[in-house]
Amino acid sequence: MATFDRRLARPTCLVLLVLATGCPSGPAEPSGREKGVRDAQAAIAAGELKLKEYPPLPSPAAHGEYIQLLRERCDVGYEVPAKPPGLAEAVFAEEVRGWNDTMEAEINRKFGAGILGRLHQEARERWEAKVKGKGKG
Image (cartoon, rainbow, N blue to C red; front, side, top):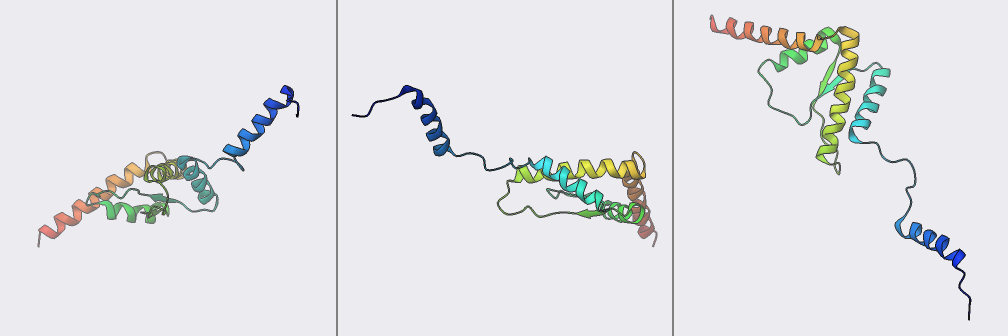
């Protein structure tokens, strides 16, 4: 009959436990926010500035004017991305928030703090002027 050596029992159990549960095979996937920040940093380094909107929300009437001003004044794009299949809604929303936080910081650094608010205001004024101009006819 084979003898049982207690000195080998614990390491053997540990090895069996690791084999049964599996080991991570590499670095963990970044959170949605971390991925968004990382992707935005890479885009900024490549000279691309773009804001994203997800989930798409009802927009104020002047939103089209705002997007136009972003392009004209700051060469900033605007995108409503589609959620990739298989990715959780909350994870993708966090990714977009991380992207936008990073992009907004860069846009403020490059064009001055508060630039996005000023463009929003100007867009509202442009839109209101267009609406008033149509009503005079």
